[in-house]
Amino acid sequence: GAVVSQHPSRVICKSGTSVKIECRSLDFQATTMFWYRQFPKQSLMLMATSNEGSKATYEQGVEKDKFLINHASLTLSTLTVTSAHPEDSSFYICSASKGGPEKLFFGSGTQLSVL
Amino acid sequence: DAKTTQPNSMESNEEEPVHLPCNHSTISGTDYIHWYRQLPSQGPEYVIHGLTSNVNNRMASLAIAEDRKSSTLILHRATLRDAAVYYCILRDVGTGFQKLVFGTGTRLLVSP
Image (cartoon, rainbow over all chains, first blue to last red):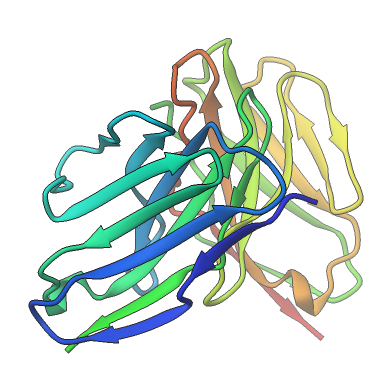
């Protein structure tokens, strides 16, 4: 089956630094990728939708200057958390779509801890 | 986004069937019904999806009501590995991005 690789799985950083998370579709071209965040014991919250070669579409309340999304190719999307603060500590998950009504494929998630 | 309603939690014994309900009374004609599950500290995993007809795969069965306002995910024989949060989601393929918006899901507990 299709695989989505997310890296790193865990990152600890100091407050004020930036962190980049990569999401790769390994055996298919993802026309669209989605980024979610999840706080403990809560559901996934959609942050943004990225399409290859175009600007990401952010959900209401998500700061686009803080969460930079780049979808430079059909197999790679990156999420950069800029000037991270402790409140940004969360589980970040990406997913990829082949298009159409079919299922989404999810990465294994990145646990970000900001000290 | 069309919303779904699921019980917060359900319990089952190992080897028994499990029926996880989902209500989606505001479903539109272009909404597909998707089910995903999430094990602790992992990304969600696809389970099954359908539009109007019942669906079966190696993981589960999906029973869709005739009016499409509700559906039921059926795990035929629960195992300990099936303990997870199960999300019923409507995915509107009529929109450009076809995004998946998660609700609160049902936490399934499986006892030996």
